[in-house]
View 1 (cartoon, one colour):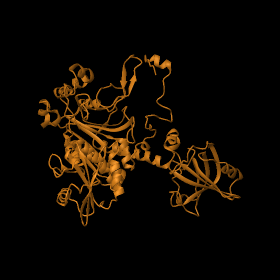
View 2 (tube, one colour):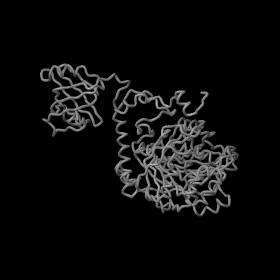
View 3 (cartoon, rainbow, N blue to C red):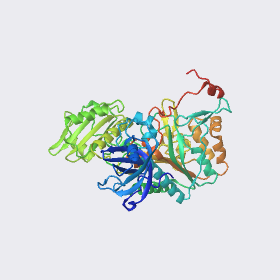
View 4 (tube, rainbow, N blue to C red):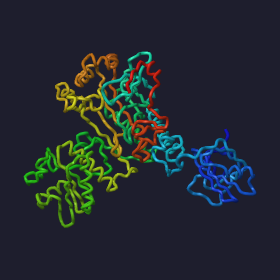
Length: 586
């Protein structure tokens, strides 16, 4: 090794030792008679010191010609610093340099390689190998490493075995769009990159590997956002001879283990909520339960406290639903107008916003012309509001207005400081619908995937064709309003799986062509099984307190799915296209 120690290692008990350090120049400070150099590696920063008259002229000359990010080797003696730096782990010592050697000079980097950089995201992504030198990014990847290590430790201790599954697989029509790979040896035929190892892990259950896991790369050709990448990593798991309760207990244990070992936190109760209640009270299948503000119906299936008062907006709506914001009655008219503009944004689509202030002297609303004190009192009782609260109300068609109100609820949670990223609330959402109907395509789709089992008590509904009422034996784990994992108990009988394919519009021939291998396997003794997958990148970003997963991936893509560092994707040479028998007019 060129070095005897790292730049984060030396302390006062090393004083007097001769050491050799290597790293990158963070900065230099030349005060004439004294020169200080900050030397950085991934372990930390150590200060080097050279003094006129005491250090060699060669070392002084070399130090004065060092530029940012030069790679150097420095030899010297560890001494105690006179002016200590409590912001550095090595801040009690410095190196009195006897010799310094440039191992490789460097161009001036395009942005400052410091915690607070002047580089925009586009520039940092183009020079990602430089961005990775910065402490925040390095710590994000260290956190990722720690999470992976603890995942493996927990699952290994629970007798799971890690098995790799193929990356070149078969394209299927269900789910998101596949990335496809042409086969040179089979002209006109294509592999697909896996969206998940779903069928392979089920085949492993048939094979008798009753506890499987894998930290696996998956690929989806879909529109991107801060928490989505075309390639991502899953903690993929499957178990045999289990029911839903076994899966929930096992992986609730995993999430508890990760929070305790990675964050030092006991997450407390992991509650459960049905999909129906999540949609009814929060308008989302992944509600943020760090704060309350659950929905209250003033008009809907179970209540009507608004009709017959000649207010056409409410009279024409099938649903009138609101939230009670504690302590917001003092919102100004300008602030309420901002909220109205917020819900009217095209991506939300509400037509307007009604409010009721619960003040110490009574109830005041934006619809006082139509609703008297007795009406507003009934509303207040429904919301259980108190003096100081603000009630916000939207109206419209049921599912649509709930989605709109969900956005308003999250906005108010943010404005009221109730969405602290360091306050973690974890819960399960269970009993999802098995199927959802597409009006555009005039057919049913699997809400999760075609291998999800219906709840046993709902199988008669499925066989009778009452498909909208069939619940799935499925579950999602939600942390702070983010779905971090999901799965289901699987179908394991050929007859039921064939029925599922039929419901989804597959002909018998199509089902055999796409999934014949799985149907055949079920005839050779498939055990009851189920599992789930956690979004590993998303989990890491939650532990790091970030909304974006990019800083937890070494070399991420941008919003257009491009790697701007290596300029990918890129065109193929004509000779490659010809060899693959691919013709293009682009």
